[in-house]
Image 1 (cartoon, rainbow, N blue to C red):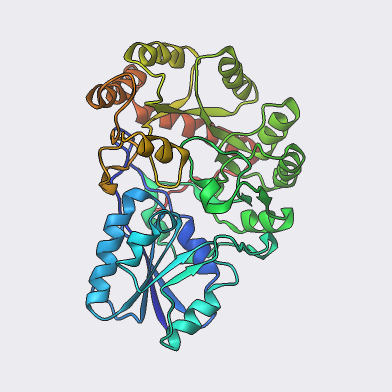
Image 2 (image 1 turned 60 degrees about the vertical axis):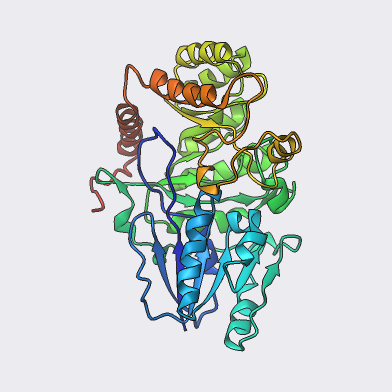
Length: 409
C-alpha cells in the first residue's frame, strides 16, 4: 500500500534567519507504521507536493498552529480526488474539531502500537472519524528509533552546511508553563526513555550535530546526569532546551557534547545573569528565548530589558510575541477576557500580535518586537553570530576527532 505523508509549509518567524530543520513528528510516526506500508514523505517547506501522485492513503502531519490552514487545504485537495486523508500531529490535537471538517480521520495521541489498527481499518473501509489515544499513552519502552530514512537529507542545509537532526530522550513535562500546551497534549508526567534506547538511536544517526527536542532536560537530575554519562562516548555535539543549573550537571553536559542551549530569559535578575555566565563557564553557548507581551510589559520595560540582554553576552537571541494557542492557560485567560482579536491561524507564528496587550496597543507591541530583533543584531548580524557558534562546534569536533569536512548539497 502506498502511503503519502505530508508536512505542510508555514510562514517562518519574521526577522529570523531562514533555515529549515528536518521535522521530528513525521519520522517518529513513520517508525510506527506497519511493515507492509510503503511510505513516501514530502516536507513542503523544502520540496513541492505532487497533488496528482498515485497514492492509496494520505497523512497530513501538523506540528504548528501556523500549519493547519495549509494542512487543511492539502487534505481537501486529495479528498477531492477521492483519496482518504488522516490528519495527526500536535497542531491537529490542538485543532481537532476543525481538522475533522477536512479529514476522513483525525489521530490524537502517540503513534507507537496504534498504527496497525488504523491501517487495518483503512483496508477494511472502516476508518474511524477520530482515534483519540491522548489519555492512553503507549509504554515509553516501546518508543524506538525514528525512521529518518524517509527524509530527503540533501534539502536540510544552511549555506551548504548540514543542519542538526532532531531526537528525543523523553516525553511529557512536569512543568506547566503559561504559554505551553504540553499539559493538554500529554499531561504533566515526565516519561524518560530508557538509556539504551536513547543511546542506540543517537549512535545510529549519521550526523554529529543534534537537537535534543525534549521540553526540558531539567526534570530529573539523576536521570539527566545518567543520560549525559551514557552520551559521553558518542562524542556527539548537541543543543537542547534548558539543563539543570548545577555544577555536576553542567560539567557532565559539557563532557557529553553540549554545544548550546535554548534558555528562556524571563526577567533581568541576577539569577538570569549568573545562569548565562555559568553556561559559558562550561563552554556551553546560549540562545536566549525572549517572550514579549506579558501583562506587565511596557515599552520602557522592554527597552530596559534589551539593555540587560546585551550586557549578559548571549550568543544568540530569539524574540517571540505571546501567542494564545488553543488549550493553553494563555488562551484561556485572554479568551475569557475578550482580548483575542484574530483567530486566523496563519497569524499564529509567534511573530504577529493577535491579542490586546494590557499596557500598550497591539501596534506598539508589534513595533517593540521589531525593535528587539533590530537592536540585538544591530552591531553583529544573525548570520555572523551563527557562524561564530558553528565555528565553535567545529573546533570542538576537531579537538575530539569527529569533524567531517564535508557539506550535504
